[in-house]
Image 1 (cartoon, protein in one colour):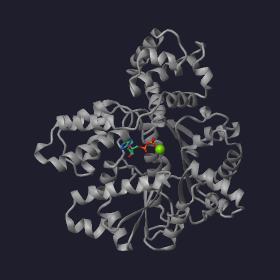
Image 2 (cartoon, rainbow, N blue to C red):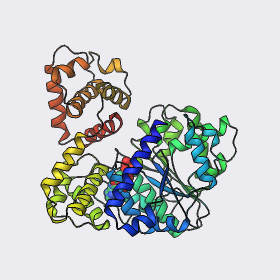
Image 3 (cartoon, protein in one colour):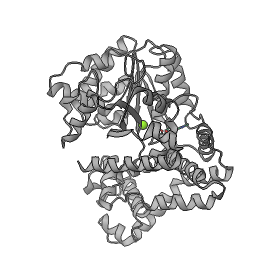
Image 4 (cartoon, helix red, strand yellow):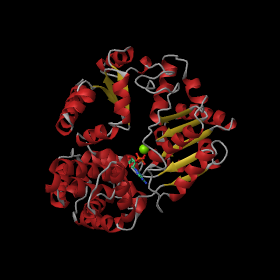
Length: 459
Ligand code: ADP
Ligand code: MG
């Protein structure tokens, strides 16, 4: 319950922000009666008084709301609207009141909060903001982009499955949803479903536990099935079997399968060989972290699409400062936009610098334990192995990374870092951290790995 009262507060902050920044009439007409219902697995559900308001919010005010959400540190992947007082809202209310989420209550054929708000009969789960047009193509992602375009033009025939992998925030979700949106535009009658592997898993478990029907129908009747974050299958044998059957059935019928993951199939621990080889039958492509020039290009494109006019030095400053992933770039860009809006001509690079510093300082802190766990988990090591004496490379490098993160995330002293990893001599900590810092300049895989660990170890 605590979580929900926290979320309610966050939502009030969003509304406060909107009220301060919008004309009174606009706020009153569209946002005053917009209420928070639920936020789960990246999906924010809001309730509005009527369909007219929902249409307006989706049409004209989507970016305004996004900016206010980002300012309150809320970054939902999807926003769903429901009409206040309907049975959908009551269903979600009931679910919220339980301390543990009861999966059985989900009706799998019509999942809660995802009722199409437009005229579409079938809910694709696709977010229309992800398109090919607003994706910046560069050396780091041009192959993945080309394959996605290819699939969008000839679904089910060209590359099946299409498998995209790469670190956090590098545009995988954007790309695979863009394929879905493009196919939908060309074939409005196609049944397309975008889903995360976690949802697939939950649906599957619920279908067994509650003996619900609807699972097979939901997953095996699609023309295009897009599944995100398939690393979630790691270690889940039963779900892998179910996924394998789903996969087979779709592939045999020339239905397109699109998958994204933070790593290639061979690096998903325990992924059944037959699944790995199925993935290899199609095409597997990586997206790499963007270079400085690409980061500038992305910022310029995003600024333009949100109607922001920022000086080149502001764009370059953000591109220099935010190096790990694109979500970070977007966050900083939104902040710059807000500052410019609120400060007008008083807006300057120094102001932005100060603002970004403050928000870094107020970021929730992780703990040494979390860093150790996240690093061990990421590299499939035990905590004992991580702090062992072993100098084998597959243990040594993760250990150096953990030390590096303790320095950069927590500013621990070298002796503290040495102790956390059960080392007597703190000079190892110094040389380890120097080594990682040096390699980061050239090693994009390392940068990727560190960004992924950072993402999960923030407390
Ligand atoms: P991932 O799924 O790889 O973690 P996302 O697709 O969620 O990353 O991307 C994070 C954010 O960055 C999204 O808002 C996305 O639109 C944006 N983004 C990522 N790559 C690009 C790109 N090349 N061009 C434009 N926007 C991008
Ligand atoms: Mg993603």
